[in-house]
Length: 298
Ligand code: HBI
Ligand code: FE
Image (cartoon, rainbow, N blue to C red; front, side):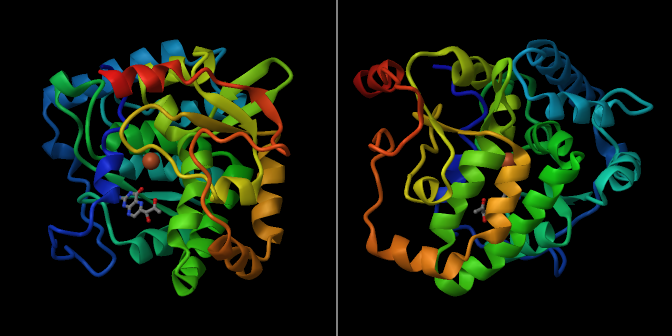
């Protein structure tokens, strides 16, 4: 089936079985923009054209506004030097290239200092809908537009700071769910209806349609503690999406929550099942889960 570009997440769940030597203390490498081939640039342009045609009317206005930052002076894969001039001017964030997944503490340290790590490779033309690791299209097209939004920019930084602290509590798996269900797969409630903003959705053609239109998944109002009790799917479209009312509220909640007692409570409470609906949930869509069932049978 069409897995969108989510399969990359599978690698995040694996133990670090392929030890890689850090290329530098902070794991960054040069982008080497001059090394991209004409085919690489054409892949970016195809994906960019396809998603930017699909997203108006589906994506959060904040994302659409941020997308302009990716329209650089030359077509093809963005040159981080030029991109960073623009992104830096907007919110002070920078994009840095890394060879692939980096250790958690390194990842959080970059976010806490307003540096977003991005893969520098791009998928091959036969992988437009399907790949296992985040490539530059996911990392840059998916994430950079929201990093250009001042409130969301602060939210991702706060997440990085919280991530560093979660390591001391042994609560990384719980906190990672917050990132997953907001930064990667979040939906926003607007006066015109639900809109997409999660990078894992907006960089995937299939999930850009599924997350908004399909009757299968649950769509539930965002609640910080509830989200942190909810496991997620790493191998296919989500079975539950969480909907925020505003990015301001999301940021405020993340800054004001005292995570130490929250982690203590979570350590006592059992995880929920992915598709559970609780009496206190603000249910927007009660999903049929037909899509997930069809996968299980296949
Ligand atoms: N590395 N390059 C990269 N990208 C990620 O999204 C990423 C990572 N390393 C660790 C990591 N994410 C996780 O810590 C979290 O998403 C929880
Ligand atoms: Fe991502």
